[in-house]
Image 1 (tube, rainbow, N blue to C red):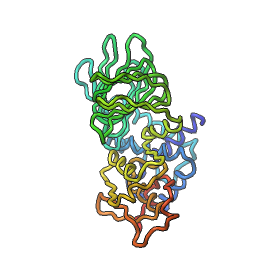
Image 2 (cartoon, rainbow, N blue to C red):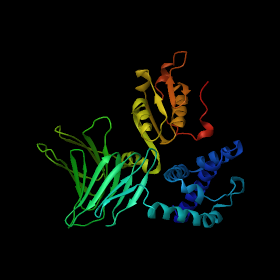
Image 3 (spheres, rainbow, N blue to C red):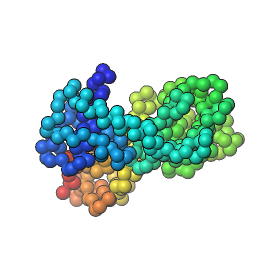
Image 4 (cartoon, rainbow, N blue to C red):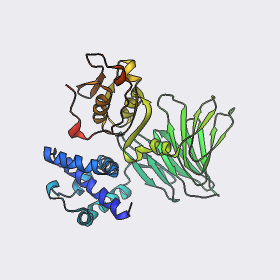
Length: 349
């Protein structure tokens, strides 16, 4: 993809989000937006990123241009017009220290709220990407770079420095690298469990409690470290690594996950809760790519694909079996439709 094309897509996505932020879209505007989203898979990723930026700071509202959607110019012309506010917003994100708390002269904390994704450039040329509801503490010393993942999940793109190893600690696990790209996640379902995913290079994973042999991970491998229970390593396809890191673009990817597991993932990004009381429904397997901040769109999509019924009360969405029994052929169906935007999220009646 040409660099100019990417800027055009990001600029148009920002305009759509800015328009939605000012007022509810009319039916014709929603149809135009949905057509743009469907025209290219890159559009949805840019749209999700733009939503994350707008959620990050209320100042984005003041910076967004008041360009009517109906009068949007062609992409090449809009790039120049939007450049001013997009650069200004980037400056706000980097200079205002959003998500940053300075603890002392050498230590900083970076955090995100629910539904937010934040990328941070560090002094040594490394970069952090924080997933929703994540907290990372950073302290650079003369002989090493110490980071602590205190909550959530983060991707670490490490600048090489053989004199100062890059060490990430999470619960009772430490991950050591010199120059590489890897993600670390504190698993919510098990307090002491840590997942390490290596995208590039090599890292060493160790149990700081002792008694467990450390493990060396190379690219396209994942390790699960659980205190006192050892470190389990498994290989991954490169496509699986990309799916696991889809949250960087505000998306959630599922590939054979149960519906219950998928529904639980949305709680990290939204106050809306998807409730599945029937274990037979919760055990159904799904596939697809969905907007992380759109649980209603996800519920609507899987309901259509799996023949379920939606009941919604406030922030609670229930997925239920229909009054009539679902046919065996339908029961084996997999949800493969990506999360739909709000104009498609009408509840089943």
